[in-house]
Length: 251
Image (cartoon, rainbow, N blue to C red; front, side):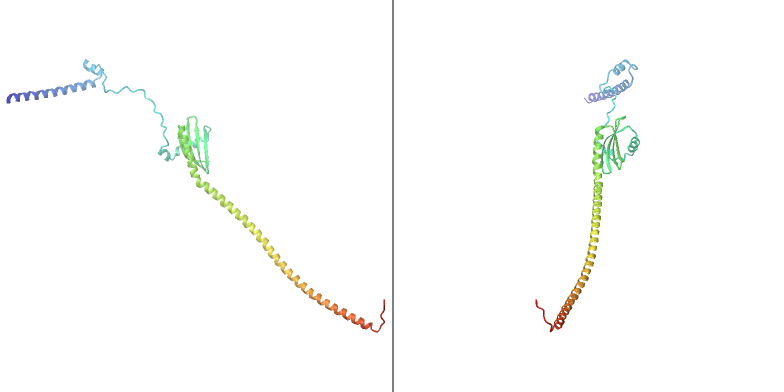
């Protein structure tokens, strides 16, 4: 029993080794047949090569050009200096190819939407004192409108302080003008008042002088009247004495 088991074990091991060797050869032949072009090897290899593999990909169609992206303004575009677009637009602005579609002004700031019809390109600008600050170039009409609206709102925000300063400067100048007018009016009134005071002083002095003169004249008048009465009394007495002893005429 021990020998039979031993022989069976030895035979089984040999079969395993032989099967492994055959498997290696079969794998090598399969690899060679797949690597060999059709018609260049044996008929069996050609037949295998002529059959499509189940894992082969489907034939690709004719390449189609990718559509341009139409996403919103990217952070890079939002932060770009756009010096290149600025220079490009500055060169184009002097020609007749650009069409101004929209423009909004807020103080010294503003936004414009320009269209270059030859290339169906939009230029959206943010400017200050008619100098380009930001320029975005795009062929997407919707995106151009969105950026223009954003630049317009931004120009409103940027101009708020400037407009407030302009109003305050105007109010300050207006107030200073009112102050100057009021001061001039006050100066005129003060001048008139000074003249009135001076005139009042002169009038008072003259009134006092005239009053004093009138008082002196009144005293002189009273003295003269007293003298007149005394003189009249003396005349009457002298007349009576002179007529003493003379007959009186009767009527």
